Image (cartoon, rainbow, N blue to C red; front, side, top):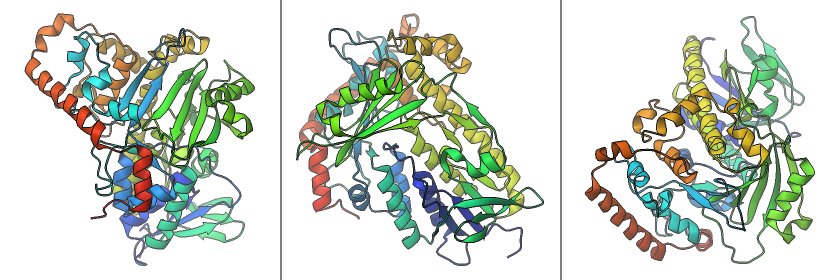
Amino acid sequence: MDNKTVNRVIIVGGGTAGWLTAAKLAKHLNSKDPKSVQVTLVESPDIPTIGVGEGTWPTMRKTLAELGINENEFLTHCNASFKQGTKFVDWHSTPEDGTHKHYYHLFSSVVDSAEFNLSPYWSLSDKSIPYAEYVSAQTVLCESGLAPKLISNRCYEGIQNYAYHLDAGKFAELLSNYSCSKLGVKHVKANVTEVVLDNDDLISGIETDSHGLLNADFFVDCSGFRSLLLGQTYGIDFISIKDSLLTDHAVAIQVPYQESTPNINSTTISSAQSAGWIWDIGLANRRGTGYVYCSEFIDHSEAEQTLRDYIGPEAEQLEARTIKMNCGYRRKFWHNNCVAIGLSAAFVEPLEASAIFLVEAAANMLCDQFPRHKSLMPMVEKKFNDSFQYRWTKTIHFIKMHYCLSQRNEPFWQANRSTETIPQELSEQLAHWKYHPVSKYDFSHVFEPFPQDSYQYVLHGMGFEQQLDYASSSYNDALRVKQYQTLNQRLQEKLSKQLPSNHELLQKVAKYGFQTV
């Protein structure tokens, strides 16, 4: 084939970003065929992956199914469990007298808000029922640690919508084995010593310490925070968002279960603290915990002790790992014949578990728009950069919304409410939503990262006050609301009796597996 055709792709870096991208590209481009595009992943044997991204979105089910990975194998290999949303504890206000308030951001609602919006009806009610319970049966499942499906369901089929908690290191290992054995990906273990540019400023190859010069037509930078290709080679600026999202460190501890039959949480638990928040993720074999914090408001030793106190006496002998976070994104994500995916492109703190989802989204767009002919690259580059500029901006605004709506009184939270730290577009949205329900017309982009329902779960959960009395006559379909409330109540009663616990279902998966047909 001529030299204007893209026939070889090199991905620099492994981890979830590298191997998920490799798997998707190889599947989409049919790399098993030697006449098709060949995908090679070059991974350093000396640089460990970050490995703390342990939560996904429901989109992962479709991703795994399209790759052809069996859900039973995935769950077992990755010590994965079922995630049905996030439980936010003490985010609304500083707890007093040992009273802890919480709200849920769930994956299933009794009706899609774009079809019929229950939000204004709840705002105009006495609010005796929490919003999440008003619109979803999933609150009952989460409170009881129940699973979203039965062992008799097929792989990736859910009675309620669900995502996963997983061991990120084992997930990358699973993807690596599957990509190389089933999809035709070539795996090279080597350190990159030099990036070679041609006369047109395109990357032509990479020099390695153990495999010499490796040439390709297109390169994917999954080298993590180093951003070896996009950042170091091409000098694409990193735009910090420290002035908006204030957290800059995390300390993480893995906690083994103490019981033989543990209560595995159905949600990520996010508990607000004086200078940030603690994640608590229940995998099949352990809990993953960590404190995301701002070092301007707490020192590292105190942050670690806060996490240990949260875990309890069992944390005394457990190892803690501190991670410096540099939140922000590259000015461009695609430049010439190189695209960055994962940490090399951007990093936003792990609230709402957007990292793996945005890797999925980037790999999907790369596959769908892959420039087999080099003449296509400038237009695809522009489309990709425009799309992900929008997606990352919206993600940052959504995460910031959690902080700026809080009424906690510590200095960290006061700083998050300061107008100087709130993006103008978010401020304008909140001002609009004070007098107008969130609606489908607020989300005009086809690739909106967070849907209308997500905003409503957070806004109402955080106590955002809407003044809709002046328009109450517009919300007059009481009969339809009653029908959904009845349906929701019946679902809660039925599912709470029908569904097993997370632990029980995972035990059955290990023994029997879900149906594959």
